[in-house]
Image (tube, rainbow, N blue to C red; front, side):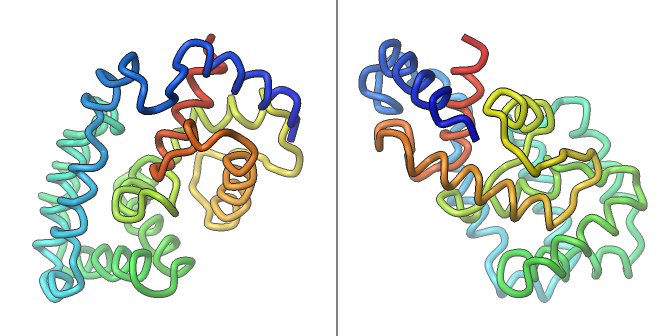
Length: 207
């Protein structure tokens, strides 16, 4: 990872937004994405006790996808159609995968979710990482393909090859890199919201 580049974009970002993510200039973006409020809702909708009802879990997934600004408008109706057409055993698998991802064996949960979504040609990084990110905003990362590819290229991260099909191995390696990058910058731009930090990287690269 090119630490010099990271320090350069940090300086530039803080020139634009001296208070980091508390700067008034960023308030419109923060309000639009509203990740804190959606995070609270996700922790309620995907509480452990709700997983006894796979159909409810699938409906709640649709609800969050529809509400989230992190998911493209193009994918929202596809997710609604997927959930409507799901057979009972796939609803069960989906709920089990999500449960494991949030509360149990993360690798097994990740791979189960990818498997179920693959049936509907929806095994996409954004859909696999959405709920874990909202549930644990300070620990898990939301993976957006274009941003991820740009970060790997721009910051010259070695040993990471992005592929469209989500894999747990890539996620773990990439998350470790992002955590190490976050540790190198000011607390003003490393908030307790990992989408905020990747948002900083994205905005800095664009500028």
